[in-house]
Length: 393
Image (tube, rainbow, N blue to C red):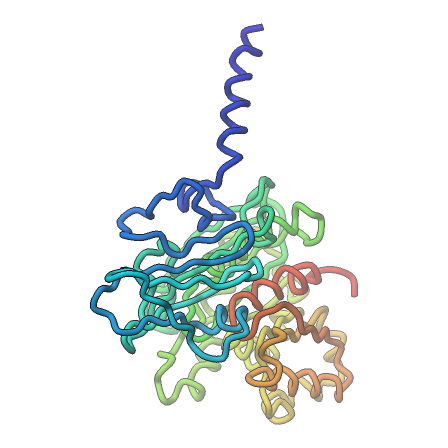
């Protein structure tokens, strides 16, 4: 009886809290910008952005001396079908506001332009972290947690490792996702997942939500338990004029001498090519092509996301003309977003056309509503790459 008396109030409290949106950073919320209590983010002077259940978004900025405020950012402008920054309206002597939408549920990068200067939204606590100038994150929620959100399923762990690289003569980092129930005595397949230009080793977990995506797929029975290694594939400063000339040779050496041996030493891994995959977005996809395709003694599965090369016939000639290549690869994805095919996506088109010409088995996929952005890369990870690794094809 006592047990029932204590459980009823607890159930009531759980119901009461579930009926209103949590505020950002209280839990790992799937609707952090829904503000039913009209609370200002800590340290903010207005609420911005604010997202309603009908997917309208209101941005606010207190800037009494500003002459012009605009909303910008490729992902949000694409979602709004806008081809140029969208102006705010000044509603009183100090406050600028803009309401847009409805916006399809997803996560979007945006910035503000204030009198010609591009800045983050100073009132938004959801900000990006990478090797490029700051940006703000807009989370437009649906009816429940999305495929990239933390759901009530078993969760794996993400561990940060710092190691010394003799190749690059410095301290470097990588992040390792281990699946729920990871047992170091077992042997797991490993996906080495690379970022793009300006991304850090942590960005696949922070913006890409790779760990939550893997958790959800494994819980759904749509992906095999695997390790996901997220290294720093920036080996030459991205603005260095010799970046293209130097980076691929250096990154291959870093993979062979530092990254793969470190992971095999510290985790229970399958150490054959059949147990390793290499994939990446944009520049990381080019690393996958220009380095991974030359490392068939290390990897047998690949993912080139929003990447490729218009001169694939020349740059990947050895791979394309290997008569045994189809026996060496298990899965090869060339994927991109619907909004990038006609522009930067022509690189991926050229890659898949070369693979098709040489009769190399591969999966070419165009999907999602994004362009060259995280909306696309999260989509590709969940809907194509992870479900197809280490399956029978």
